[in-house]
Image 1 (cartoon, one colour):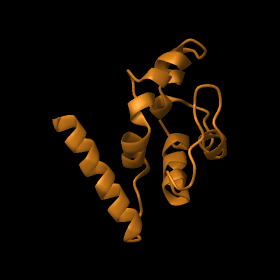
Image 2 (cartoon, helix red, strand yellow; image 1 turned 30 degrees about the vertical axis):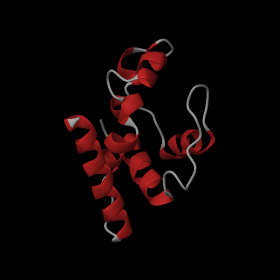
Image 3 (cartoon, rainbow, N blue to C red; image 1 turned 180 degrees about the horizontal axis):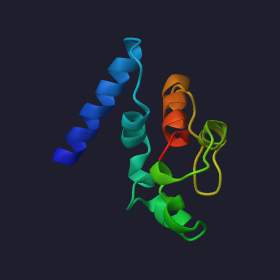
Image 4 (cartoon, rainbow, N blue to C red; image 1 turned 45 degrees about the vertical axis):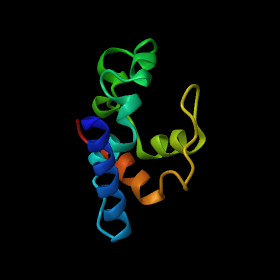
Length: 105
């Protein structure tokens, strides 16, 4: 229950920051919106580990990701990854997540 409450608080904070025009942290947005599947022990990470070497399955540690690739996969989906529409994840938040994943590891 505490975990669910924490997630709701983080989502509310990110949503409030985006509405107030404040920059959204890509790391915070990734943790709030993506880590349920893409964290170290997430379902999507386990699937990716079957196809990718080493730490490349953990997106936050993966090298060679480009922001453009992240955005295409998020908006169009691929394999088990569903597409995420703008109504579910706004462009500003997606940009922040893409920058975070593209950045230095």
